[in-house]
Image (tube, rainbow, N blue to C red; front, side, top):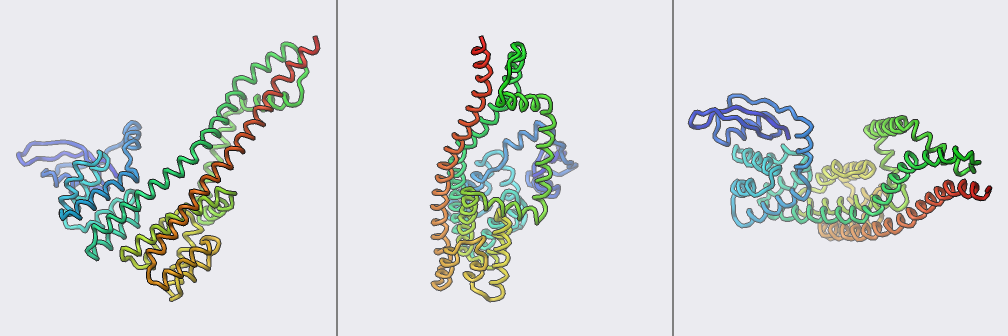
Length: 401
């Protein structure tokens, strides 16, 4: 979304100025005309750092989209026209969402379909969301599709919060360890070094290692930061290439415990999305293509594209999934085969999604249980090394008197 400054005339001929947010200049002009103004000039607004911070704070979250979907579904189900529903939501939503709803309302009133209006906001409403709304419009069941979408978005938010909540403790511990180590190396150890130099103490090996590390960080901290920045930049460039992203995604899956957790999380979202799309009337072929574009791992995305190609050639979906054991577990192809035989693919995919979600919960607990003792052991070794390196020279000094 971009911001534009405008100068316009109202119905009484008075000149008014203001600011509007829209995807492009033509959409901004539509919004201004929707207020009953005649546009005189329209120019893009140049953002300053403070406005960028404000925009980050006002960023539209998945929770905002889920709330919008739930409320719109309720209104349409109650018999309100979509324009009236959007008009009500424009005044009830939070400020950042109000601008999006206002533009959706302007596009729909101008004759666009709701799905086409949504497609102008790809960063807020994904391809899956738009495809489902389009299928609901074609089938005349938009309220039911929006209801399923709201349920799905809320489950995604709940599941994501659960995973983040379980991992926050280990992350805080690791960050704390890094900060304490940096403070020790930069501020505490150099003072101990000057103390030992005054007494001409003979330093043991652990103390020499610690002082050497501290001196290096104090003198060359900018080199360390520069090398870290360069390494991150090179990694981003490598990840931007198809081969690099695939290699990194493969490596993530090979990380003990964490890699399998990532696979389970992706498969949970994948099967839940496929179930929702198939249940809403989207063809399985189109569903596979759409999910391959939105899934967060190249390995699984490529497997979905190949599965779509196999289905297009006439092969069963279960067979197409079974060709990629590196991406899809055996239970998925088994359950999909059951769905094909019974004709209840959406129900089967919903069940397998729940299985993956339960397994993901167990993996999260397992990861947390594995990280905590590892962190404590590393922390204990680090503290023990610091104590030995600091106390041993003092012990040598006192024993020499």
